[in-house]
Length: 587
Ligand code: ADP
Image 1 (cartoon, helix red, strand yellow):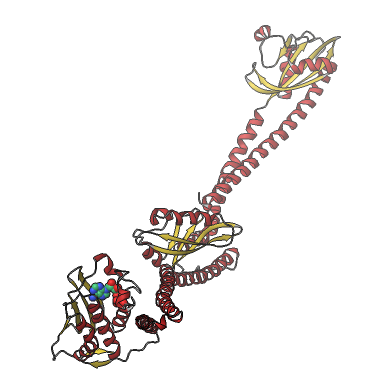
Image 2 (spheres, rainbow, N blue to C red; image 1 turned 180 degrees about the vertical axis):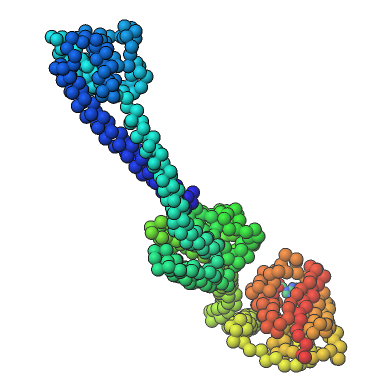
């Protein structure tokens, strides 16, 4: 219901109540006054008639009906006379015939009171004359007899007053009523109009439209309200702008964060999940409003969320592993969002530590491997030296064999150390290759030159299938020679007597593709992905005797990567292997 209607309705009711009150109390007052006047009059007349009856009225005239008629004519009233038994002796309104049949008046209240106390009054409806009447009765004594004379007057005058008042007042009162209602309606419109404008403005603000201000037309309360409203609009607008800016700033931070962010509300439903986390956990659908379990399929994350929501303060730090979409290790920091002592939600920050853990494992393995690799030749050297010192030195045949073993083992130790240093240098990041344009044919010749004696011992042929016109490559000469030496060295090592090794190259799409193929023992398929790891050997027993350190391919892979190329291998066990690497052509 509009306030306008409320005001009009309320004032209409109040006006109607006041006006009808005025009308009815005026009516009652005038009636009372008239009644008092009539009863005072009739009382006076009753006293006069009693006097007349007792002292003067025609002695000897016993016709009370006649007396009643006369008195009525004089006083302009109805006069009834009853005897001590209540029988009606005379009545100005009834003829002799009617008098005989009229009932006894002894029990009429005014007559009973007159017999008892001298006078009695009563106003009631008269069945005899069929009108509302006022009666006044007085006791009289005449010729030793007691009776009651009763005067009655119709109360029609009172009715007359009522209808006169109606005629006089109804129209002006109705007029006043309508004028007041009209005035009221106009006033209500004046009051509720600005309120309606303010309401409409409030609705616009709720819908986000701050463009309009309220007009301030008056200096009264409504004007002040409009002013306060305009001030509030400005204030709210700047606060909303502030909030929006900081929200978008926060969103930008969340979005650009490398770590995954998950925010849930007090019931554990997702409020926010940043892109990094969606990618990390491969969340495809819109996660907002759902529980973590519904989109992440990981019970640990769900449990951690619930646990965090039961906290009042503090931080939970937990390492979790997920299997989907791929095996990953995550470090999660979860903290509740509390306001006024109530938990309103929780924030979970996911940090992908898979690489860190892998690196840690690699480092641990590496240290263990290095120790193991170093211990073997050192133990061998120590053993043979001790044997020599213990007397074997005096046995020239054995002494020579032992010294040769010591020589080989120290050579292995030196090779191992130099490979380790090489690897450390390349991996340290301080390694700065000296790129220059150089001929591939030159490298290959240089690399093969050093290895030929070893190959000849096993009667292995090394063929350089290279075109002299091959374009130059962009490489660090020393490094690239190292790559070729390692690959050809491996080919020789892992090829049996009378085998063949072919080094070939071809240029395509800005890269030089160099292949070293052999007819050696080959590599089982399951080992291929691992042979580039440090110290990984397919046959754990063989290579030591052949002088391998297990680091050669790891070094090759690093150097090729630093050059911007890649290294691949194809192999068939028992038939041979082909190692292929690429290097960019010199532009
Ligand atoms: P190593 O010093 O033991 O040769 P590498 O890193 O050079 O270490 O090679 C790792 C492993 O890869 C070797 O132990 C060997 O088992 C395998 N491998 C490398 N090259 C060849 C090849 N041409 N033919 C067969 N196996 C090879």
